[in-house]
Amino acid sequence: MDRTSIEHTSELPMSTVQAACKGDPGSLTTILRHYDSYLNKLCLRMLYRSDGSQMVQINSYMKSLLQAKLIAYLVGFDG
Image (tube, rainbow, N blue to C red; front, side):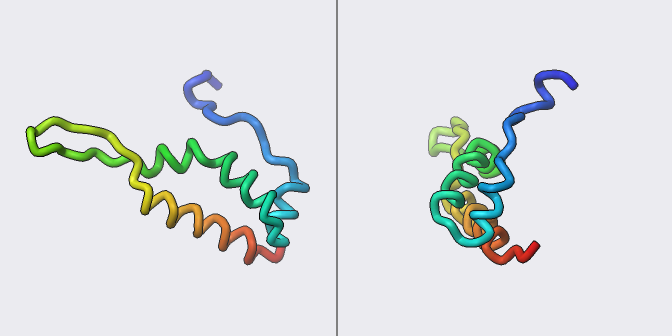
């Protein structure tokens, strides 16, 4: 694999994921922090200013929805 295809190679410890599934706030925060740059990339949107220039910005509403979905999935996971 080349370096451009690997963006985030560090893995979350299984104990962190298991604690997050049990609702541990610290573990949930760790997981959200781990996926922060990925979520930012998913939520990029092109904005157009009144003068016609373009600007890329993170859609914070979309990001908060994705974070909530991730938390809901983890807490609801019985595995």
